[in-house]
Structures are given as C-alpha cells and as structure tokens.
Length: 263
Image (cartoon, rainbow, N blue to C red; front, top):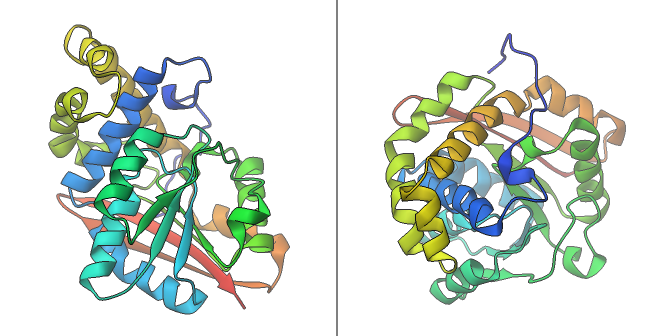
C-alpha cells in the first residue's frame, strides 16, 4: 500500500477544539454508520481474532471510539465466531449517550469510560490486563503524538491493534460514498442528541456534507504507511512483536492493520 504522496498533517473539522458539538457528532456518527452499513470492517475480523489470541486478551480498551461503530461491528462479528471480547469505549470527547445505547444493545461486550481519556497517557486503572484498539483514528495523530500513543500502549497494555479503512490515496475515499451519503442523511434522526441542530446542518445548508467530505479527503492524506509505523515502534526494541497486513472491502477499498503483542 505504498504511495508516492507525502503524508500531510492538514486539519480536520472533527479535530478542532472550537467546533460545535452537533457538527463534530455529525461527522463522527455518520462515519461510524458508514463503516457499519458498508461492512467495511468485515475483513478485520480474522486478523483481529489472531491479535486476541496472541495477546491473550479478552478485554479491549478502545481509544478514540467516536460513536462506537467499530467496536460494535467487531464485537458482533467475534460473538458469531464464539469468541468473547469486551470493549471499553473511550475518547477525548466522550459520547456518553451513544455509548449508553451501545452498551444496552450489547451489555456483555461493550462498556465505556464516561470521562475524557488521553490516548498518550491512559490511567493505570483503565489499563490493567487490557489490550488497546485504535480503529480509524490513528491518522489523527501527528507523528510525535502517534509515537507517544504507541509508547504508552507498550508500557501499559497487553497489546495494541490499530487499523485504517484506507491507504494514502484520495481516490479511496470514493468507496465511502455508496453508504456515506445515506448515513449522513439519516444521521439527524438516528442520533441520541441535538437532532434538530444536526438536521439544520444536514438539510438546510451544505455544512454537514462539506465537513464530512473535507475530513474524509484529508484523512486519506494523513494516514501512515507501514515503514512510518515501523519507524515509530523501532525505539521499543524487541519488547513487542509487530505485524502489518491489509484487507479489502467492496467496491474497491483496501485498508490496513498493524498490531503489536508482547514478545
């Protein structure tokens, strides 16, 4: 999945501290439903199951959970395979209403931490005995922050699994359009809060569509490639064993996963 394009740390609306919560939620919730409705994480199930086996972890601390879509998808898929795994959702901007609904739907597989959690400095009380997951979130971190996230995981967890649903290729964002537009249009009425504000952003102005398209396009330019990820973990020596791979989804999408387990 190597690219000729350099990695660009452009801004995403979702990352701006001053953005209105309804706007941030619109972006995050629409993406979460796009991943679910488009079955874009199905190819992750097998490598994720291998990660669980190699890390000997049954509890996952999910960092940057957003609206919780990836955790729901993986929890359901693992349950169908008879594999127990419990996700604890966390985020710098917790979405307690959405997470409460996810926990109610999957009480055996999903819980959450209601306070803000910094992925570079996870409290010891949340770390104990758990592995960590970062699904479609690692591209948000500049290199020095990404390295700090991985270092904290190496020092305080049973393993870390990260994945992105695209490579560094803006054309790959077109794979999101098929389910992305319906997910955006349906989002105001499926949300747990601020429905009328989200409806105004979505139906009465181009704001929601524009922000989602921009953030999706920029995400493809911010994603890390294998050699960059391996350079981040090189300072950790042989304490962890690292695995990189790719997976595919329809219509022509290619994502990657990168995980480390204690050696």
